[in-house]
Length: 302
Image (cartoon, rainbow, N blue to C red; front, side, top):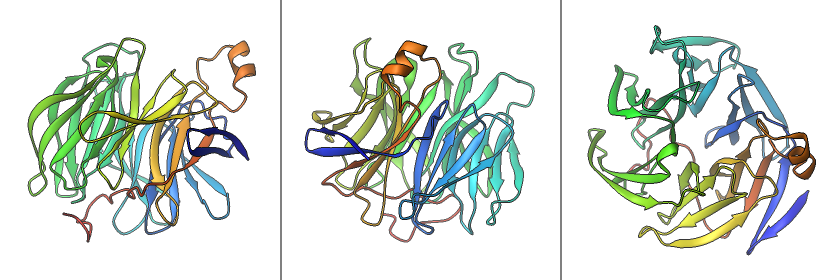
Protein backbone atom coordinates (compact mmCIF):
# COMPACT_ATOMS: atom_id res chain seq x y z
CA UNK A 1 0.00 0.00 0.00
CA UNK A 2 1.63 3.24 -1.15
CA UNK A 3 0.91 6.01 1.31
CA UNK A 4 2.79 8.97 -0.05
CA UNK A 5 5.47 10.13 -2.42
CA UNK A 6 8.37 11.96 -0.78
CA UNK A 7 10.38 13.92 -3.33
CA UNK A 8 10.97 11.23 -5.99
CA UNK A 9 10.78 8.26 -3.62
CA UNK A 10 7.53 6.35 -3.04
CA UNK A 11 6.92 5.35 0.60
CA UNK A 12 4.99 2.15 1.23
CA UNK A 13 3.68 0.60 4.43
CA UNK A 14 4.73 -3.05 4.13
CA UNK A 15 3.81 -4.17 7.64
CA UNK A 16 1.29 -2.51 9.94
CA UNK A 17 3.20 -3.90 12.91
CA UNK A 18 2.11 -1.31 15.50
CA UNK A 19 5.47 -1.78 17.19
CA UNK A 20 5.94 -0.05 20.51
CA UNK A 21 9.51 0.87 19.59
CA UNK A 22 10.46 -0.60 16.23
CA UNK A 23 14.22 -0.38 15.69
CA UNK A 24 17.42 -1.85 14.29
CA UNK A 25 16.57 -3.08 10.77
CA UNK A 26 19.34 -5.03 9.06
CA UNK A 27 19.13 -7.06 5.84
CA UNK A 28 20.54 -10.58 5.95
CA UNK A 29 22.11 -11.13 2.53
CA UNK A 30 22.27 -14.91 3.02
CA UNK A 31 18.61 -15.49 3.84
CA UNK A 32 17.07 -12.49 2.06
CA UNK A 33 15.25 -11.55 5.26
CA UNK A 34 15.03 -8.20 7.01
CA UNK A 35 15.78 -8.54 10.71
CA UNK A 36 14.34 -5.88 13.01
CA UNK A 37 13.28 -5.52 16.64
CA UNK A 38 10.60 -4.12 18.92
CA UNK A 39 12.61 -3.06 21.95
CA UNK A 40 9.95 -2.94 24.65
CA UNK A 41 7.86 -5.78 23.26
CA UNK A 42 11.06 -7.87 23.70
CA UNK A 43 10.77 -9.38 20.22
CA UNK A 44 13.07 -9.95 17.25
CA UNK A 45 11.31 -10.00 13.88
CA UNK A 46 12.20 -11.56 10.52
CA UNK A 47 10.42 -9.97 7.57
CA UNK A 48 10.44 -11.60 4.13
CA UNK A 49 10.20 -8.90 1.43
CA UNK A 50 9.20 -11.45 -1.19
CA UNK A 51 6.23 -12.99 0.62
CA UNK A 52 5.40 -10.23 3.08
CA UNK A 53 5.50 -12.76 5.93
CA UNK A 54 6.83 -11.54 9.29
CA UNK A 55 7.91 -14.04 11.96
CA UNK A 56 8.56 -13.08 15.58
CA UNK A 57 10.96 -14.51 18.16
CA UNK A 58 10.45 -13.46 21.80
CA UNK A 59 13.66 -12.94 23.78
CA UNK A 60 12.23 -12.20 27.23
CA UNK A 61 14.18 -8.95 27.79
CA UNK A 62 14.33 -5.51 26.18
CA UNK A 63 16.31 -6.01 22.98
CA UNK A 64 18.51 -3.25 21.56
CA UNK A 65 19.92 -4.68 18.33
CA UNK A 66 20.03 -7.71 16.07
CA UNK A 67 22.63 -8.74 13.47
CA UNK A 68 23.09 -11.83 11.27
CA UNK A 69 25.57 -14.32 12.64
CA UNK A 70 28.12 -16.43 10.79
CA UNK A 71 26.76 -19.95 10.51
CA UNK A 72 23.16 -18.76 10.69
CA UNK A 73 20.87 -17.31 13.30
CA UNK A 74 21.59 -13.93 14.84
CA UNK A 75 23.30 -12.06 17.62
CA UNK A 76 21.23 -9.75 19.84
CA UNK A 77 21.81 -7.19 22.56
CA UNK A 78 19.65 -7.64 25.65
CA UNK A 79 19.37 -6.09 29.09
CA UNK A 80 21.76 -8.67 30.55
CA UNK A 81 24.27 -8.79 27.72
CA UNK A 82 24.96 -10.16 24.24
CA UNK A 83 23.17 -13.35 23.23
CA UNK A 84 22.88 -15.63 20.20
CA UNK A 85 19.83 -17.05 18.47
CA UNK A 86 20.60 -20.46 16.95
CA UNK A 87 20.26 -21.11 13.18
CA UNK A 88 16.86 -22.76 13.60
CA UNK A 89 15.54 -19.74 15.53
CA UNK A 90 14.45 -21.94 18.40
CA UNK A 91 17.01 -21.30 21.17
CA UNK A 92 18.57 -18.25 22.84
CA UNK A 93 22.01 -18.52 24.47
CA UNK A 94 23.81 -15.83 26.47
CA UNK A 95 27.31 -15.28 25.07
CA UNK A 96 28.65 -12.31 27.03
CA UNK A 97 26.93 -10.97 30.14
CA UNK A 98 27.41 -7.21 30.50
CA UNK A 99 26.51 -4.88 33.38
CA UNK A 100 24.96 -7.67 35.44
CA UNK A 101 24.99 -5.49 38.56
CA UNK A 102 23.29 -2.59 36.77
CA UNK A 103 19.66 -3.63 36.24
CA UNK A 104 18.72 -0.33 34.59
CA UNK A 105 21.46 -0.55 31.98
CA UNK A 106 20.59 -2.32 28.71
CA UNK A 107 21.98 -2.56 25.22
CA UNK A 108 20.64 -0.21 22.62
CA UNK A 109 21.81 0.03 19.01
CA UNK A 110 24.63 -2.02 17.50
CA UNK A 111 26.19 -2.86 14.11
CA UNK A 112 28.97 -5.02 12.69
CA UNK A 113 31.88 -3.84 10.60
CA UNK A 114 32.98 -5.52 7.39
CA UNK A 115 35.31 -7.86 9.31
CA UNK A 116 32.57 -9.17 11.58
CA UNK A 117 33.24 -7.12 14.71
CA UNK A 118 30.26 -5.89 16.69
CA UNK A 119 30.07 -2.35 18.03
CA UNK A 120 27.14 -1.80 20.39
CA UNK A 121 26.21 0.73 23.03
CA UNK A 122 24.43 0.58 26.36
CA UNK A 123 21.97 3.07 27.84
CA UNK A 124 20.11 3.74 31.07
CA UNK A 125 16.48 2.61 30.79
CA UNK A 126 15.37 5.64 32.81
CA UNK A 127 17.15 8.03 30.47
CA UNK A 128 19.84 9.15 32.91
CA UNK A 129 22.72 10.75 30.96
CA UNK A 130 26.25 9.41 30.66
CA UNK A 131 25.44 6.01 32.13
CA UNK A 132 26.24 3.99 29.02
CA UNK A 133 29.26 3.06 26.93
CA UNK A 134 30.12 1.81 23.46
CA UNK A 135 31.54 -1.72 23.37
CA UNK A 136 33.49 -3.71 20.78
CA UNK A 137 32.90 -7.45 20.77
CA UNK A 138 34.19 -10.30 18.61
CA UNK A 139 33.79 -14.06 18.69
CA UNK A 140 37.37 -14.23 20.01
CA UNK A 141 37.24 -11.67 22.84
CA UNK A 142 35.10 -10.36 25.66
CA UNK A 143 33.22 -7.06 25.22
CA UNK A 144 35.60 -4.12 25.57
CA UNK A 145 34.60 -0.50 26.22
CA UNK A 146 35.90 1.73 23.41
CA UNK A 147 33.90 4.94 24.09
CA UNK A 148 32.72 6.17 27.50
CA UNK A 149 30.66 7.72 28.79
CA UNK A 150 27.67 7.75 26.48
CA UNK A 151 23.97 8.29 26.95
CA UNK A 152 21.94 6.67 24.13
CA UNK A 153 24.09 4.98 21.49
CA UNK A 154 22.12 4.81 18.27
CA UNK A 155 23.19 4.90 14.64
CA UNK A 156 26.48 3.12 13.92
CA UNK A 157 27.79 2.46 10.40
CA UNK A 158 30.93 2.69 8.27
CA UNK A 159 31.99 4.38 5.07
CA UNK A 160 32.20 1.94 2.13
CA UNK A 161 36.01 1.94 2.27
CA UNK A 162 35.99 1.26 6.03
CA UNK A 163 38.03 4.38 6.86
CA UNK A 164 35.31 6.09 8.92
CA UNK A 165 32.83 4.97 11.55
CA UNK A 166 29.73 7.11 12.07
CA UNK A 167 28.24 7.20 15.56
CA UNK A 168 25.15 8.90 17.00
CA UNK A 169 24.70 9.49 20.74
CA UNK A 170 21.15 10.80 20.37
CA UNK A 171 20.95 13.34 23.25
CA UNK A 172 23.98 15.19 21.85
CA UNK A 173 22.04 15.82 18.62
CA UNK A 174 25.24 15.13 16.69
CA UNK A 175 26.67 12.63 14.29
CA UNK A 176 30.28 12.01 15.19
CA UNK A 177 32.84 10.34 12.96
CA UNK A 178 35.80 8.27 14.06
CA UNK A 179 38.86 7.54 11.97
CA UNK A 180 38.76 3.74 11.71
CA UNK A 181 41.37 1.04 11.21
CA UNK A 182 39.47 -1.81 9.58
CA UNK A 183 42.37 -4.22 9.97
CA UNK A 184 42.43 -3.88 13.78
CA UNK A 185 39.02 -2.45 14.67
CA UNK A 186 40.67 0.42 16.53
CA UNK A 187 38.94 3.81 16.70
CA UNK A 188 41.02 6.89 15.95
CA UNK A 189 40.28 10.60 16.21
CA UNK A 190 36.67 11.57 16.96
CA UNK A 191 35.25 14.61 15.17
CA UNK A 192 31.79 16.11 14.72
CA UNK A 193 30.38 15.30 11.27
CA UNK A 194 26.91 16.84 11.68
CA UNK A 195 25.55 19.07 14.44
CA UNK A 196 21.78 19.53 14.54
CA UNK A 197 19.47 22.14 16.01
CA UNK A 198 17.60 21.44 19.22
CA UNK A 199 14.51 20.49 17.22
CA UNK A 200 16.34 17.76 15.27
CA UNK A 201 16.96 14.47 17.06
CA UNK A 202 18.91 11.88 15.06
CA UNK A 203 18.29 8.20 15.79
CA UNK A 204 19.40 5.28 13.62
CA UNK A 205 21.39 5.55 10.40
CA UNK A 206 22.90 3.63 7.50
CA UNK A 207 25.42 4.33 4.74
CA UNK A 208 24.66 3.54 1.10
CA UNK A 209 27.03 2.27 -1.56
CA UNK A 210 28.01 5.81 -2.58
CA UNK A 211 29.02 6.72 0.95
CA UNK A 212 25.97 8.89 1.65
CA UNK A 213 24.58 8.79 5.19
CA UNK A 214 20.84 8.21 5.73
CA UNK A 215 19.55 9.31 9.16
CA UNK A 216 16.18 8.62 10.80
CA UNK A 217 14.91 11.52 12.91
CA UNK A 218 12.75 10.78 15.93
CA UNK A 219 9.82 13.19 16.15
CA UNK A 220 10.51 14.76 12.75
CA UNK A 221 8.51 12.57 10.32
CA UNK A 222 11.49 11.94 8.05
CA UNK A 223 14.70 10.28 6.95
CA UNK A 224 17.39 12.52 5.45
CA UNK A 225 20.33 11.69 3.18
CA UNK A 226 23.65 13.53 3.57
CA UNK A 227 26.63 13.43 1.23
CA UNK A 228 30.15 12.53 2.48
CA UNK A 229 30.83 16.24 3.14
CA UNK A 230 27.78 16.55 5.40
CA UNK A 231 25.55 18.40 2.92
CA UNK A 232 21.82 17.60 2.86
CA UNK A 233 20.98 15.75 -0.36
CA UNK A 234 17.46 14.39 0.09
CA UNK A 235 14.58 14.34 2.59
CA UNK A 236 12.11 11.47 2.68
CA UNK A 237 8.88 12.27 4.52
CA UNK A 238 6.96 9.52 6.30
CA UNK A 239 3.37 9.47 7.62
CA UNK A 240 4.40 9.02 11.25
CA UNK A 241 6.50 11.21 13.53
CA UNK A 242 8.76 8.80 15.39
CA UNK A 243 11.07 7.51 12.68
CA UNK A 244 13.70 5.40 14.40
CA UNK A 245 16.08 3.60 12.02
CA UNK A 246 16.70 2.58 8.42
CA UNK A 247 18.53 -0.05 6.37
CA UNK A 248 18.77 -1.07 2.73
CA UNK A 249 17.44 -4.42 1.60
CA UNK A 250 15.65 -6.33 -1.12
CA UNK A 251 17.04 -8.15 -4.13
CA UNK A 252 18.76 -5.06 -5.54
CA UNK A 253 19.55 -3.41 -2.20
CA UNK A 254 17.76 -0.28 -3.41
CA UNK A 255 14.79 -0.45 -1.02
CA UNK A 256 15.23 1.51 2.20
CA UNK A 257 13.36 -0.13 5.08
CA UNK A 258 12.36 2.22 7.88
CA UNK A 259 11.18 1.35 11.39
CA UNK A 260 8.92 3.58 13.48
CA UNK A 261 7.44 3.72 16.99
CA UNK A 262 4.11 4.39 18.67
CA UNK A 263 5.13 4.43 22.35
CA UNK A 264 4.44 7.76 24.01
CA UNK A 265 1.93 9.00 21.44
CA UNK A 266 -1.36 10.35 22.80
CA UNK A 267 -4.73 9.02 21.57
CA UNK A 268 -5.05 12.15 19.42
CA UNK A 269 -1.61 11.61 17.93
CA UNK A 270 -2.34 7.95 17.25
CA UNK A 271 -5.55 8.97 15.48
CA UNK A 272 -3.47 11.26 13.26
CA UNK A 273 -0.80 8.57 12.78
CA UNK A 274 -2.72 5.28 12.49
CA UNK A 275 0.32 3.47 11.10
CA UNK A 276 2.76 4.54 13.81
CA UNK A 277 4.93 1.57 14.69
CA UNK A 278 4.73 0.27 11.13
CA UNK A 279 7.53 -0.98 8.90
CA UNK A 280 7.91 1.11 5.75
CA UNK A 281 9.72 0.66 2.47
CA UNK A 282 11.14 3.59 0.51
CA UNK A 283 11.82 2.81 -3.15
CA UNK A 284 15.03 4.71 -3.93
CA UNK A 285 17.24 5.21 -6.97
CA UNK A 286 20.46 4.34 -5.12
CA UNK A 287 22.13 1.08 -4.13
CA UNK A 288 22.65 0.34 -0.46
CA UNK A 289 24.57 -2.32 1.40
CA UNK A 290 23.37 -5.38 3.24
CA UNK A 291 24.09 -5.94 6.91
CA UNK A 292 27.55 -7.20 7.81
CA UNK A 293 27.68 -10.60 9.50
CA UNK A 294 28.96 -11.04 13.04
CA UNK A 295 31.89 -13.39 13.49
CA UNK A 296 33.62 -13.53 10.13
CA UNK A 297 35.23 -11.39 7.43
CA UNK A 298 32.85 -10.52 4.62
CA UNK A 299 34.19 -11.57 1.21
CA UNK A 300 33.89 -8.10 -0.31
CA UNK A 301 35.38 -6.26 2.65
CA UNK A 302 37.71 -3.47 1.55
